[in-house]
Amino acid sequence: PDSETRGGQGGTMSSATRMPEVSTRAVTSGRRLRRARLFASPRRRVHASALADTVSSGSPLVAYESVLASSPLLTKCVTSGVGFAVADVVAQSLSGGFRDAKRTAANAAFGLALYGPLSSAWYGALDAFILPESPNGAAAVAAKTLLDQILWAPVLVTGLFAWDMACKGEPLFVARDE
Image (cartoon, rainbow, N blue to C red; front, top):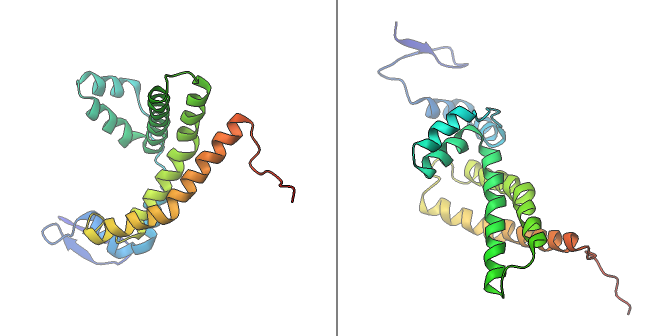
């Protein structure tokens, strides 16, 4: 009465001996599960009433986590856009005062349209493929940090400079006379 069929394997397990659902799936589907989690795009909508209830709870962190759970990619993109805008305003303020709203908007757009979705995919791939059985262990953190600095940081910095030049109307490549 309290048993269930294991997906695709045909046996039964009682609830007393049942493994946690995630572990069973990970064992039975292996790499496919990691890929599915990496590329899964839940299309749940953030309902205004649920968001209002969460915000009215008084905890901005609870509100953020609720929105993140219901719409992860959109939340990451918006968060990145806001982060890039704030960083640009701070950078301008430290170097003589805020004076270039167009630059701030361009940086916000970079965070929203490029950094948010690409970083979400990059870090999702790292979590899915680099020691997924112990994602927070010292070896996993060291490997992810190394890959991040060797592979992702150069792409990010180059992309940001190219974006900045394109937004200013500057050519990305200049022919040299020799």
